[in-house]
Length: 506
Image 1 (cartoon, helix red, strand yellow):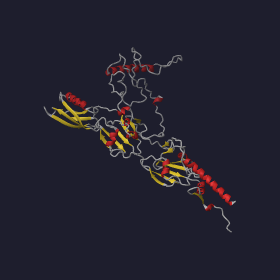
Image 2 (tube, helix red, strand yellow; image 1 turned 60 degrees about the horizontal axis):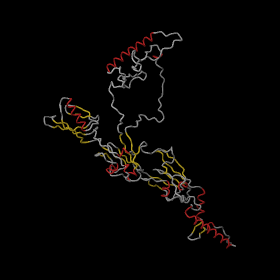
Image 3 (cartoon, helix red, strand yellow; image 1 turned 90 degrees about the vertical axis):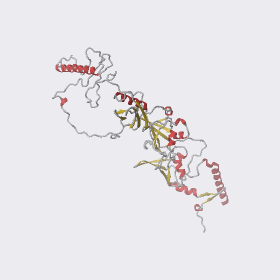
C-alpha cells in the first residue's frame, strides 16, 4: 500500500514537471509573485512618460514657446554689415589736414550710435553701412562748409555686433566672429569643439532677434493726412480731461500747423461763448420742453459735419465754490493688497526675439534640413544633460545609489540594473518618491507587474528619485513554501525533510 502511494506521488510530481517544462517561459514562475514580465509573442507599443503625476510636477520643458525649423532658416542672407554700438571704425579723410594729406581717425561707436569727427562734433552712424557712413561724413563736412567735396573712406576694423555666442554643454563656449554669411549650425558646434556629451541632449536652441516688420514705418511729420498735430503728446494729462482729435483729411482743413492752431483757437472761443450763454439762460419750467443736450456741439458753422475739430478740455464747466463737486471726499484708509500671483516689478516678456528648436539627433545624423544658417547676434544654447543619481531600496537584489548622468533611465531599466526583485518583493506595492522642490516630495504608487507586462506605460526617472519595492505578510510564507521543494536535474526533486510529518520511533 505504501509503495502505491509513493508511486502516485512520483507520478503527480512528474506531471507538474511536464506542465512546467511545456509552458516554458511563456508564463511567470510558479507561485512567485516577484516574477514580472510580459512573455507574449505579439509585439506591443507602450509610451514612456516623463511625469508621475500630471499637474503636480512642474513643467521642465525649456523654451516652451520655441518654434520648429522653417525654410527661411536655411537661406543665406547676403547684405552689407550695419554698424552698431561698440564697433571700431577707421575713417580716412582726404585734404582735411592740408592739401594732399590724409587724416586717419580711429573711432568707436558710442552706446547712442554716434562718433565724433574733427571740426564736426558728433554725428549719428548707427544702423548704417560703410558706404552710407561715407556719404554721411561727406555731407556733414559739406554742410559745415569745411570740405565741399571731401574724399572719405570708412572701414569696420572691429565689430561687436557681427558675432554669435554659443553656451551650455560645449567644450569651448564663448562669442565667435561671424566671418561669412553661410556659416551653419554644425560648423558653429565644431568651432566650439563639439558638445560635452552625446547622450541626454534632445534639442539645441537658437535665440535670434526678429527681423523688423515691414509694417513698421517712420513717424509721420505734422501736417501729414491722418495725423493730429494738436493731439496731446504728454502722458501726464488728466484722465478726466476730454481729449479730442482734429480731422485734417478734408481739403478745406488748414494745411499748416499755424493755420490749425488759429482755427482751433477760434473754435475754442466760439465753444466757450456758447457754454457761457447756456449757463446764463434760466432753465425752462415747461415739462414739454426737452432738456438741452449734455454734450457741447463741436461743429463749426458753415463747415461740413464730417469735419470735426475737437479741443482738449472743451465742454468742461467749472464747478461753483459751494457745489458738491468742489467738496473733497472724505479720506478713508485703504490697505493695498497684491493680487494672487502678482510679482513686483515683473519684467515683460521681450517680443523682439524668437527661439528656434533644432532636434540634435537628426542634426547629428546629417539631416541638412536642420542645419540652419547662423545669423549675427545669434545665441546657440546646448542644454546640459541631466546630472544626478537615483536610489533603489526595498526588496531588490542590489539596493543602493545609481548614476543618472547624461542618460534617460526608465523604471524598468532601474529595476533590472538593481538585479531585479528578491523573493519577498510584491511588484504591486512599489512607490516612487520624487522631489518636487527643495522642501517637497511626492509619493506615487506604481504597479511594476503591469508596467513590465506592457499594460501601463513606463516612466523616466529623474535625479534624486527613490524607488522602494515593498512586500506583504504572505510573501514570507509563499517564499518558504517555494523553497521547500528543490528541483534537481532530470525528472526528480528533493523534498525538505523539515516539512516531513513527525514519526513515532518508539
